[in-house]
Every structure is written in C-alpha cells, then in structure tokens.
Image 1 (cartoon, rainbow, N blue to C red):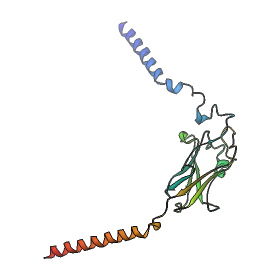
Image 2: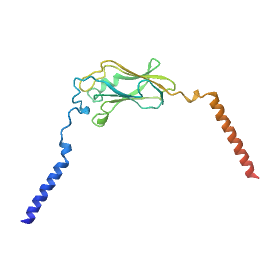
Image 3: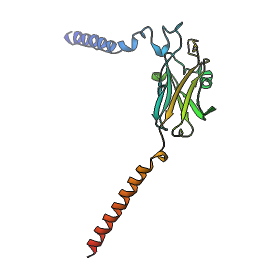
Image 4: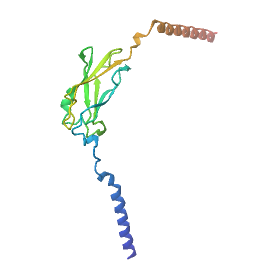
Length: 189
C-alpha cells in the first residue's frame, strides 16, 4: 500500500514537472508579435534601418547591404513583388545584384530584412543609391507610402594615395634593402 501511494505521488509530481516544462511552448504568442504582423494591420509599412545608413561615406566596397522594415516583407505571399521593389543604382544605371529575401519560416528573425548582394564588388569612391519602390508590400497588405532612396559613397581606392605616401613607402623599402645587404655582407666575413 505504501509503495502504491509512493508510485502515485511520484507520477503526479513527474506529470506536474513535465507539464510545467511545456508551458512556454503552450503559451499564446503575445499580441503584436512582429514576426506574425499581429497588431500591424492598418499601420504604415516603414523603413526602420539600412546598412549602410543614408548619407554614409567611406563605405567599404564589400559591405553587406540591407534594408529593414517594421513588417514582414519576405513571406512567400509577397516575395515576387518585393524582389522587384528593391534595387541598387550608381551613375544613373542599375547595378547587377541579387535581391535576397530570407524564408521567414526558416529564419523568423529576418522577417523584415531584404539583402542586396552586388554580383561584383562595389567600385571605390563612387556614390550608390538603394531604391525601394512603393510597390513593396507586407504580409498585411500595407505598402510604402512613398519610394525610399538611401544614398552612400564608397571609400577612396588605394590608387588615390598621394605621391608623398608613395615616396615614403619607397624610401622605407630602399632603406630596408640596404640594411639587409649590410647584414648579409657582415655575415659572409
């Protein structure tokens, strides 16, 4: 009888512990969860950030470029439209780039981010514009109220190093060669 009571108590305690460990899974998603766009219906779709930021200078040519929004813009329901809504420009011409929208089911933290991957490195000392057309659509059906442009300029290239810098580097190389030559001759003696 004592063993049976102990088994029942143990089973009840184990069941309570087991159920309490699942409580986060069973809990409801909080209202306004941005990944699901709850609470976003009726609010305008807006740009929240960009890399690089608008007006940035001295941007490295290999910088990862992205634009982020306050609503889900990567879901398969809006993917085809949104891939066409984002582009990269320089000197009045569109730059050949892949527009990458993560799968919001696989990468739920990227639900609002679109990446722009130029097929070639950006050119040095050149202005670029990320353009986002107002056809960009969220999963709630919201559109940008106006097109967005983000301007940035890449860093100057190594070829723009001044003549003084080249002279200093050349002098250091010559001095190093002389010192190595002197040390080599002393060793031979």
